[in-house]
Length: 331
Ligand code: 5GP
Ligand code: MN
Image (cartoon, rainbow, N blue to C red; front, side):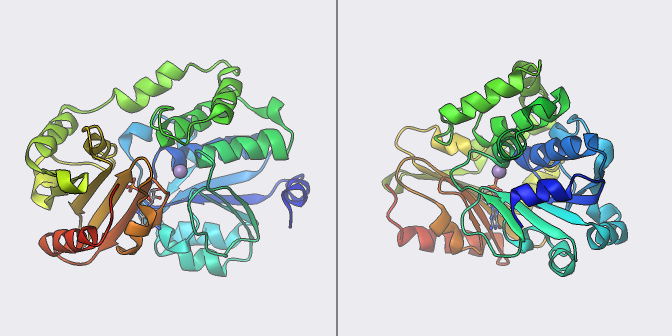
């Protein structure tokens, strides 16, 4: 099936499930809800299935009532996947990123549409709109609606708000090297619907709780290690710390970039003790890429932003990180 044939298939109302990766970020929820609003306006029946809950700083996005947080209603989530005529998989490209729901999606009969910008896609979908050079999945949703389906007139303020959010968060507010003229043109079209970017920025970045800000302060002061000879900075964050500061989902989102704000540092990482596993976040700049590094930790992502995991203890995970780092030319 092609994207044009999909458009024709969607010319009558369908049951549609939209899903995204676990621990959804701005691009994951922005693309899911942006597409959900577009398809809902066309008369389809939509459920957005989040494999885990999503952070408070995204809960203001329009369309919350369409979201099913799968772990709260797992049977309903599995049923929705099984009954859907079309399943959109947004902002991920390996089914393990949706946890136990991956098997249900793999076995489901509906058409699977993967829209994504991460490297190394798995081949599970019937149709893909995949571009690892796209800034964000939200940019690809814009491309689908405005270019592939030639339906720019259907962009509402709700859709534009969602898509703006994901492009803004995945480009670090339009400053990472995935920001190009095309991104700004897409943003200009979204702003033309009448939305105000500064309000979206405010909703995402100026809504910290006091505890979140203090958690950042604590981590910057006590958990950050710097290895100048390796041009590397990394945080090791114990579970006790996140519990003491009553960390909520997404509270550490973005702190890893502080490592890169130091002169001479091109590689920054977080080694975070989570419930039953250790989670790694990697960021880099310049010619040093982190996606190969992440493969040592069952992970993946993009050239400059990747992640992974380990079942070792925090201490052992740090040793593993340092061992891989010792073998890696950072520069
Ligand atoms: P973050 O550090 O923000 O959790 O993730 C950075 C990037 O790497 C994101 O694009 C995310 O999708 C990807 N990523 C994070 N963790 C994993 C993982 O465990 N596996 C894979 N394949 N990608 C990951
Ligand atoms: Mn993304």
